[in-house]
Image (cartoon, rainbow over all chains, first blue to last red; front, side):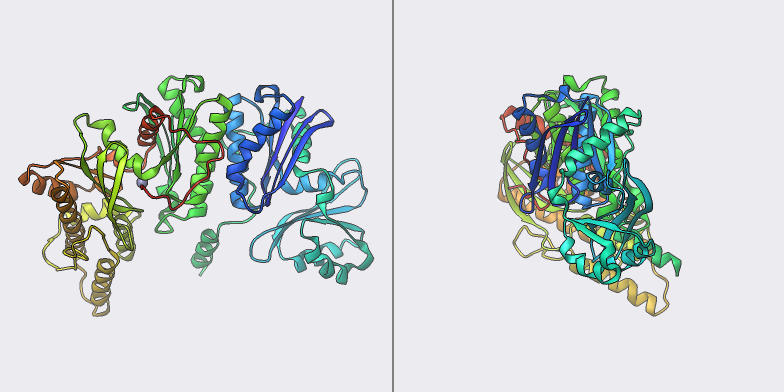
Amino acid sequence: MKILGIDTSTRFCSLGLIEEDSVLIEYTLNNSKKKHSSILIPTIKDMLERINLTLPDIDGIAVSLGPGSFTGLRVGLGVAKGLSYACSLPLLGIPTLDALAFSLKEIPYLICPILEAKRDEIYDVVFRGGNKLSKVLDYKCEDIYNLVVRVSLLKEKVIFLSESIKKYQDIIKEKMGKDALFINPQVLLSKGVNIAFLGLEKLKKGKGDDIFTLSPFYLRKSEAEINWEKKSDK
Amino acid sequence: MGVETSCDETAVAMVEDGKKIISNIVASQIKVHQKYGGVVPEIASRQHMECIIPVIDKALSESGKKLSDLSGIAVTYGPGLVGSLLVGLSVAKAIAYAQNIPLIGVNHLEAHIYANFLEHKGIKTPLICLIVSGGHTSLVYIKDFRKYKLLGQTKDDAAGEVFDKIAKVLDLDYPGGPIIEQLAKEGNSSLIKFPRPLLNDGSYDFSFSGLKTAVIYYIKELKEKNKIIPVKDILSSFQQAVVDVLVEKTLRAALEFKTKQIVLAGGVAANNSLRKKIKEKASLLNIRVFYPSISLCTDNAAMVASAGYYKLKENKKSSLDLDVVSRLTLV
Ligand SMILES: [Zn+2]
């Protein structure tokens, strides 16, 4: 089975096409200048043409659901929904943090992928690796100090994965010393490929998502909702 | 197929040959935004993401057509809220690519004008068009189909926006237009003399923020003095001020450009007081006034499909790298 994986949750536009357990092609564009909205479909088109495939050759569309940039997530999910609706393909939503950690799933340590959120906050989760990823601490939006406190209580070696690892390295080391290991995920398989692999796993379990109702996994309310709740609490 | 998600309405329609509406679905988010007293962009975008496929599916099934019957897909790419526009555009582009059919990016303002051509067969150019809604107040001279000249526009708030804000000050529901129109009916429109900004400045520009401030100040003063607030009279006088400015400038443009036809477009074109007043005054000058039925005045996708049809006829297709333009203008 062939699965197309799409990730636009960060400034990288990452696409992967896999067949069973091998990668057919992957594209990752550092897209800080151009917008995902203009390049996503042309890039998918280009990628498929490169290996002489067309949309009907694909068996499922996997897409990162977030957390991540709200705008990026909407472009990715919008395109994924449109493609799977038009081609009657299963739609497979995958949490972005799972895709980030997926490359390290064989390593029997704690794995903590981190994504940037707005306002000096991060999105994170903690898995235990080894064969498959199992969740140790749930998805959260918080600041880095909060995460370090929670993770250091586990008193184990933890691999931190973040595209902006430099920003957090010192803060984490100060509290955790040698228990903390760091990897910049840019050296691993792309998120698009990992999304596709996770999508295939999901499809084989028969758990395609409902294209009518699937929403991004925002993990963070909109400012208006937060303010409104504050106001009505008073 | 037309797709429209520029503000708080998720809309999809099927239109044949630019004129015949075969289905027209609008999922409004009014209820979701009501408690905030206006449209919240992030919440609007999230709602569009949840509604877009069900609305597309409903528009298709009601039309009895399949995606493979489409000759093109038209979608609003601006002006509007970026996050909202992106949902419609992303889905529309994906469908166009998957079905291998033309994508036609449509200007939302142009689509509002086309709402008139959907319903009225007798409209001929040249004509003057007043586009007036919660986001826009523009006066446009249409010399020939798809040839626009912007004569003037609002320098601050859009007319519809002021209706919403005044409704908010008086604790009325969002959107303000329909409820103000309802209450204003029973009020005295000449009781309070509110300003009519730029009425006689010779330009075709509008400005409504001064009027808004005057109304809000008037209400505030009564509140501070613990006096009874004559809501209906205030609203009636306020609405009259807006209508006076819109009618005066539109008619003056029609006279200057010697057009015998005027079209109204946009959500505020649903206002009966505006419709009545402009028709009355125009008939004295032998000018005909057209406006869409209420459901086609407010945001919908039939108008987008119609505008897309005429663009496609001119072979004006968009490429798949089309992006949203939040501040897109008509010309
Ligand atoms: Zn509109």
